[in-house]
Length: 128
Image 1: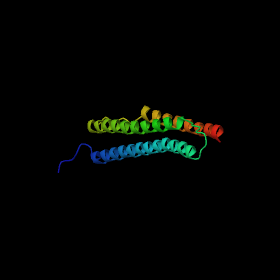
Image 2: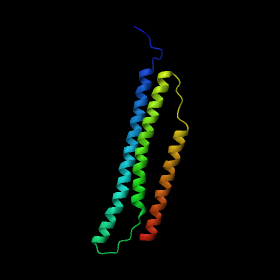
Image 3: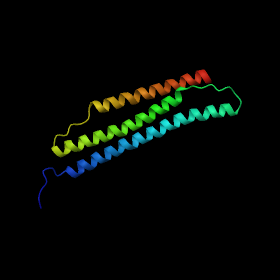
Image 4: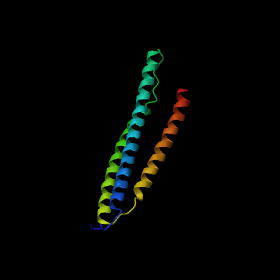
């Protein structure tokens, strides 16, 4: 039996695949969340119109939902890029952990959350 240069190679690659699948799950959840944001705004406008009230639109819900959908798709693409890069590094024995990518995704997620919270407060004051 020939001993491999890295006895943990299979484990490392499987961990890389699990991490990629986590990126995909997170991206899919953000896409669905974005769709729900956009669809809710459309449904509220339709309900308001059916009740005979003047339609006051917040307008940004559809844009925020679309932005979340694009961000979710971008996250899946970023996960694929990271997966392929990590796979190549594992094969060559030069693995480097992610640094800037994690900081960027964290900052964007926090920014999106704060914008969404601010938007909810804004719409409550204007429409409520």
